[in-house]
Length: 46
Image 1 (cartoon, rainbow, N blue to C red):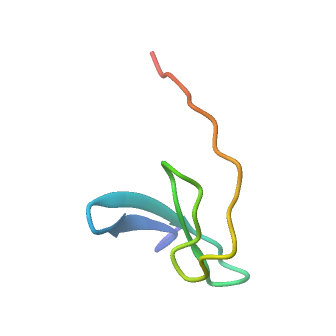
Image 2 (tube, rainbow, N blue to C red; image 1 turned 120 degrees about the horizontal axis):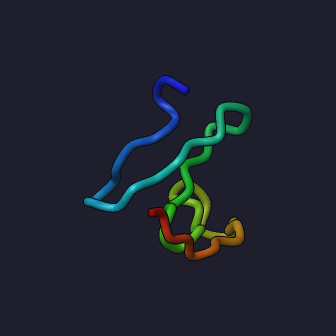
C-alpha cells in the first residue's frame, strides 16, 4: 500500500497501482482524467 494514498490540494485521494490514476476520496472524481469517476459512499466509523 506504500504510495497509494495521499492528499492533493488538501483533499484525500487513493491511487490505482495498475492505471496510475488518482481518485478523490470525497467525490470519486479522477484527478488525472476528468472524464473518469468512481462511485463513492458515505461511511461512518466507530
